[in-house]
Image (cartoon, rainbow, N blue to C red; front, side, top):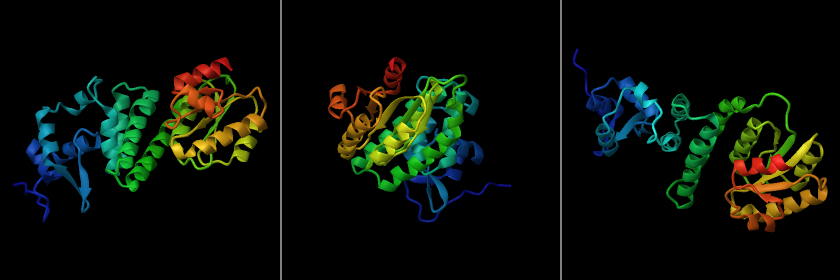
Length: 285
């Protein structure tokens, strides 16, 4: 039987269907589909079918793709966050998870999935939206997919043995980015603390109540990504310092905090510029 060429009516001249791309690559359709799912071959959906831009297909052909198993081997030149970002922007939740699975198989640690794959992909999507290159639905769609991925990875961060104490993490009222809070919570759990994740957009009085009702609390951590939430963060931190024990330090981090001086001006005891810095503070608390 002669294979029929799949043609999408009124298709743009600069792109082809995934069936056509498979024929041009001389591979089975399901192999091409797996390339897409792993983030190796960029593709997008139009009218319910996968479409591949010709320049992406030519670039992929020029890379002389190896068998899938070889693609999963650990390579320094694999930029996993870019592969993930492509699936996030396509709204492809299954493909995004396939990229994460491929990275794990390739030897990427679960903590690096958070800090070097999920985080940079979301930061870049946020930057593109801020520049007007993406619609806000792209950012929301990507956040929802990443949230589901983190839900599947979360149990891998649970530490074993006796905890080092309790940490309360959250974001102030007006700050709606909760993925960063959840990432920090999981990474701290892996280091041996019991973490109470309050999420985002929390009023100061509720944050204080959470800290005061948490047993063996070691510290409170505040995250702000949006510059517009700085005033609310300052109010929250000073409220925490007045409303909880003076023995409980308050640390702040996130994209909207630029320096240790900045953190001090907001009232925090320290600037958690990254998770490792925050862990250093907590170890000394």
